[in-house]
Length: 110
Length: 117
Image (cartoon, rainbow over all chains, first blue to last red; front, side, top):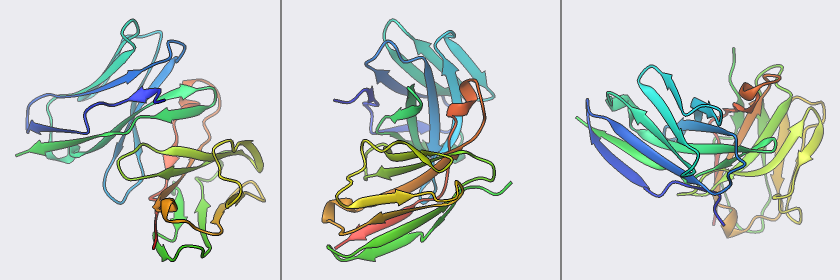
């Protein structure tokens, strides 16, 4: 039973356009959410996070939106750049651990 | 600041053989995690240490997997005997920011890709 779902295994976006990655979760008690980025042959690196007391958090080109009623979060990347091509994981805090989605592979086309 | 170190980076073994992975976390980080990541899936937590004590090992297949963090610094993960389904990337992560939401930010090593034939 997946508690965190990323339903799009891959996404292709033109360079300069907006990339939107989505994540759904099942437990309304989750209160902290993170996005990680992973390049091939490297470990995931922390990108941005959001607490359930907010509905938006922005860091440069990256913005995370949280819709608690829909139990949905999204990551927006504007504008998309070639270096953004990677696998993106969403993760949620559960007790003192993180539960991870399966990841979405983002491909930025030149 | 040095990142999380892991070795080896790649390992190929036959089923029923044993293998060990090593991890050195970021200096000063009290919490250390071992994850298993199977291709196409997210990381799955195997074991979590706080200093040299185990916080959670509920998803560690204890009949074949073992892990230790004797001095609260570096850690080893062992598989004995290995099965075909153990083929995966084994990731080590550490965290150490105390208090608040940032304590959940984990820093990962490059991982060890294990292939069991």
